[in-house]
Amino acid sequence: MPALLAGLLWLALAAPAAGQDAVRWSAQEQLSFAQRLLDQGEYYRAVTEFSRFLHFFQDTEKADRALYGLGMAYLSGGKAGKAEQAFVDLSQQYPDSPLALKALILACGARVAGGAPEQGEACLSALAESENPSLAAPARYYLGFVRARLGEFDKARQAFASTDMEGGGPFRVPGVSSALDPADNLPYKNPTAAGVLAAMPGAGHAYLGRYQDAAMALFVNAAFAVATWQAFDEDLWALGALTGTVGLGFYAGSIHGAVTGAKKHNDRVTAQFAESLAARHSGPAKEAGYPPPALFITIPF
Image (cartoon, rainbow, N blue to C red; front, side, top):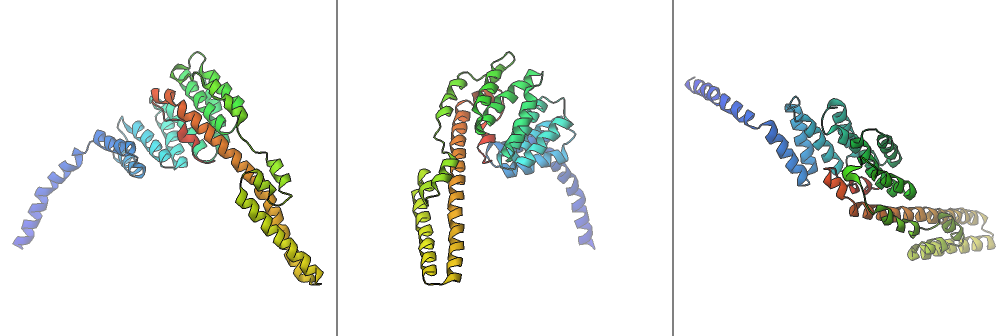
């Protein structure tokens, strides 16, 4: 019994101390810790800590910053859909926040990064028409890079040119028009030509520079053709029909592979050009406190 009383007394004395320790971790310290994790590239831990802030300190004046940090942590960690939701929540819950307009831009960018570039482009295009230059200028800036990633280089030029208008502020991109000139001579492959050439097994892949695939296509198609001819020559009609059907499938597959290979090649070429363009002209975003445009367009569509 004395031991039980002693234990209860100890708990009673320790409880206030524990409570004092709990409140020593202030909202600012929690937010700073989460931001430090984000800056260090520990995105998933940052998500946890920003979420913890929003749970315990949602009613504080820094809640908008926590939502912004949460969106950036999700976006940097490859969770574009959750990032978009965080940015939308920020713009809706804190419309008077200085981060609200930025959140609208980044919600569109997150849609691009999430694999819906056409929807992201439409979103940015709508914001670019805003009469508020603080919203329209960054929207036009990011819109230019998204259009470049989509291979819409003339439209990209138009978007960048519009940032040079009055109100463009730090988002003016001098020299970007000349930087887009090489886009007219990118080493694209013609998918139709690849398909036509692939009618001769291996030629379509050779056109794409994929010589091992070309040799394999030629060998497999030739093997099935010879096997089918021999089967019919020996009156093995069932076997001939089987090898002929399978061989026809490989033949059609090699044509399809050449066409899709050309499209993938073109997408890689476009991506490399757009990413290089974004890397060379990310200064305006950095100056304005926005993330680099490459964050949106380096994720495969």
